[in-house]
Image 1 (cartoon, rainbow, N blue to C red):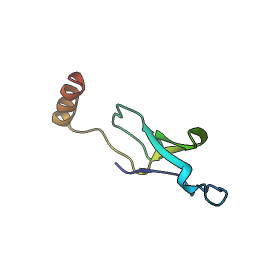
Image 2: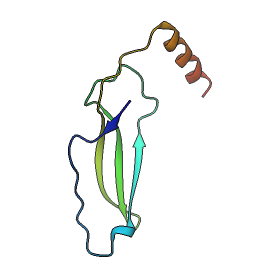
Image 3: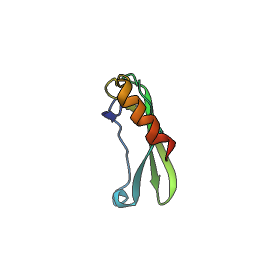
Amino acid sequence: MKAGFTGDYYVTLPKGYRERLKASLESQQPLLAPVSAGARVGTMKLTLDGKPYGEVPVVALESVAPGNIFARGWDTLRLLFK
């Protein structure tokens, strides 16, 4: 599944601050099908010098239909043992 942003996201920083900006992705787990395009699947968090700087929602860029009976059974077994 492809995930991303609904639009462009710009960050303005003073000169020399770029190296101090960190981005991390927090995804929703477990993510279960069906997932419709545009559904929120996570958050990108920005920190500057370890302090919160911003959050951007991450959404599904394409829809994902539920799998067939065998794929769902296999996925259910895998989730039981995690």
